[in-house]
Image 1 (spheres, rainbow, N blue to C red):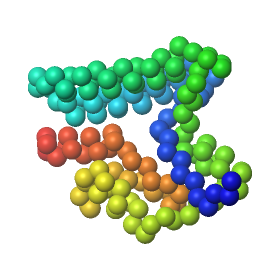
Image 2 (cartoon, one colour; image 1 turned 120 degrees about the vertical axis):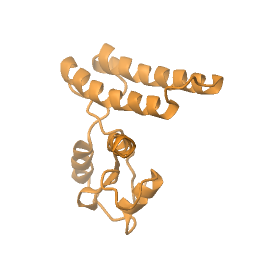
Image 3 (cartoon, rainbow, N blue to C red; image 1 turned 180 degrees about the horizontal axis):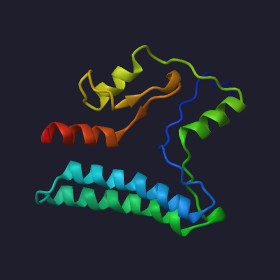
Image 4 (cartoon, rainbow, N blue to C red; image 1 turned 135 degrees about the horizontal axis):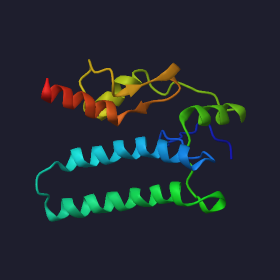
Length: 148
């Protein structure tokens, strides 16, 4: 295989620690943001049947991920998300180097999640190595606009 480029799409979480307490704490922060976003999407009103089924499906899917992270050890744990810094190190060790894929990647990412150009929280481009979409900052910004 002679690849010219490689895209890594991974959740920004560290569920690969050997210590259960470390995985639990990181998972608590990570999944609480996900469940907050699910609740924000579906709102507090009485959901339609389709919305209720979608919400249950999402929570079951993430429930399996949480079970994998907390209940299993060693080879039984099949998913092991790691943070960007670990992937960056791993990729540079085998010869990959970062390249800029398009000119205004941070502005494009903001448009993808529907934020105005002046927003500074939706996309982070550290040294133009990656685009990180940060849902929690988007939620915080929207809540501040509503309450402020």
